[in-house]
Length: 424
Image (cartoon, rainbow, N blue to C red; front, side, top):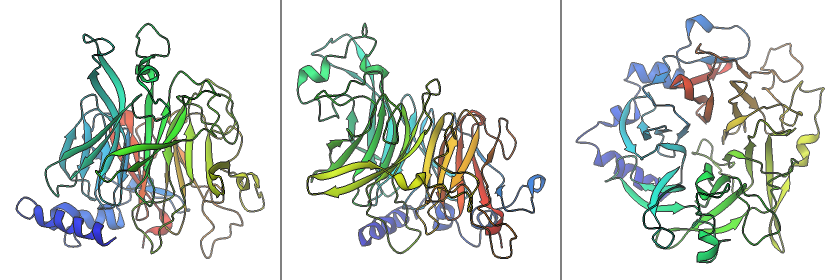
C-alpha cells in the first residue's frame, strides 16, 4: 500500500498546475461533491419511506453507449464506451478521455494504479495475409490514466496470441480465415478483474468450444501475471468451466467477471482468488446464469469448484436467492462491494434491472434496527425506460463507499443509487 500511496501523491502533485486537489478528487468545501457523492441528493420524485435504493441526481451523461464503470484505487471513476475510457472525479466531472479506436467494453485497475481495458485491436499478420487487417479482441494495460504522467499503453494482449494453450504458430493462426464460421474475429473479451497480488482474470467467449483438446475453448477465464518487465503472461486457462453444458461450474457465453477484492474500504483485503461470472446466451436454457466459482489450493495446485453452499436457500430468512432457478435472463455486469457488507450486484440487460445479494446468496439486505420485517428486504429494482429507477440495456455495475453505479448503456448515462438507510 505504501507504493500505491506514493504513486497517488505523485499524481496529485503532478496535476497541481492544471487541477487543484479539490477539482480532481472533490472536497467538503465543494457543495456539489457534498450533495452528489458523499451524501447524495435523492430525486424528489422517487423518495420512498421503505428500505430501498434511491436515485442520486443528477445522473452522469455525455457518454456514447457506456459499457462499464469502475471506481479505482485512486478513487477516480473510469467509464468505458464507444470512444474509449473516460476519467472522472467522484463528483462526475470529466477531465480526460483515453481514446481507443472501436471503443472499450470493460475496465479495472490494479493496486499499482494501472488500468486494464478490454477492447479491439486492428493488426496485419503478414504470415497469414499482408493485405488483410484483422480486428481482434485485446486487453490494454494503461499506465498514468489518472494523470500522474503521460498516458502510456504499457502492454497489449491480443487474442489468439495471448493464450498460452496456443503454443505455436499453427495453433495461433489456423482460425484466422474469414471463410470459417469460427473465425477469431468472432471471439470477445467480455470482462477483466484484478486480484490482490495484481494478477488479473479475463473472461472470454466465442464460437469454438471443443473440450478435451490442448487448445482451450473460447468460453473460458484466463489468468495473467506480470513479468519483471511489466508485461503480462498467461499462466492458466480455467478448464473446469464447461463451455457448453449448463451446470454450477459452467462458462457459457461469459459476459462479465468479478473478483472479491476492490479499492480499500476496510482494513484487510481478501487474497481469495475465487471469482464470480455471469453467463449470457439468452436463447439457451441456462437455469443458473450467475455463478460463484471457488479457487481451492490443493497439493496438486489450484482447483476450481462450485460454491455449493449457495444452494442452501433458507426461506425463513429470505424470499429469493442468487441461486434461484431462472433468476436471470441475460446478466451482463457483476460487481462485489469489497467492504464489510460483501454485497453482490448484477445488472441484467433483458430485464433491465439491478439486483443486490448478500454473500450468503440472500437477495436483499437484513432488516435495519427497529424494522418489523423478519426476512431480508429485497431492494432489487428496474424495468425498461429512462426513469430514475429504470434502465435500457444496462451493461456494467460498480460499487464504492455505499454508492452503486450502473452503466445504463442505451440511456447513455451512469446512474447512481444509495440505500435509504445510508442517508443521515
